[in-house]
View 1 (cartoon, helix red, strand yellow):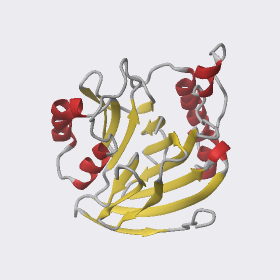
View 2 (cartoon, rainbow, N blue to C red):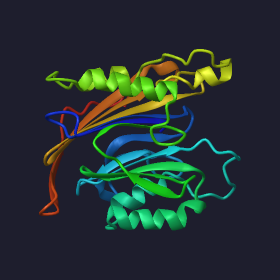
View 3 (cartoon, one colour):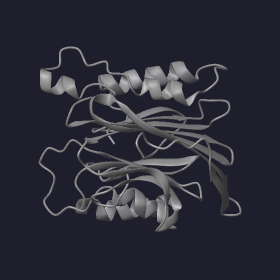
View 4 (spheres, one colour):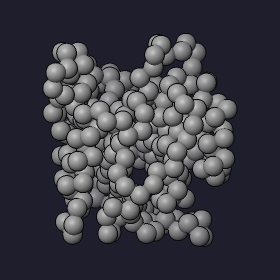
Length: 265
């Protein structure tokens, strides 16, 4: 996943809104969002090569997503898959604070990353480069391949577009946010290679945006939407899951709604 936008306490109905794009090689096998048979409490997409995920939630209301950091050096040989980090949090029982302590100890085992993790009202971003975490306060946030809330053109543009879409009493529609995440505006003045990756939505024959994931978090409820893309940005399928979360009882009644299968699937 290459870019994430988050709104905390900015919408009258949904105190938490997340919109995220995952960029990856089209040849890398992946499974679309579903409840994992071997980890029934986890709802997430799945990397078919390493077995981890880029964005997921669980039936206790936990949330986790990871992005790559742009490292000063190449990714370390023998590093563990960054997709393991969201899975470990989703299947574990550590508090977000305790998981932050784990990350401060274990981050060197992974290539550079940003990890968003926690639950509504207690969401954090851990940056491996600084070996430090930060709680996300009320407001708008953006995370990509650098530091949290860096003023990169595509990050600033995405925050502005998100503000426009959730301002006032305007109804929140998943298709509106999905269209926002397909914004292909490139940064002015960037060279040809950099410009290709300077937009929110990346297209290409071999590499590009594979998945858009949206989370609308209300009191006791998550709505998750996933849009899948093939080469050159062609949509290949979409899904919608609704999850009722009961934190106090530590139980959840969850069910898929309006679930559409990938094209050809």
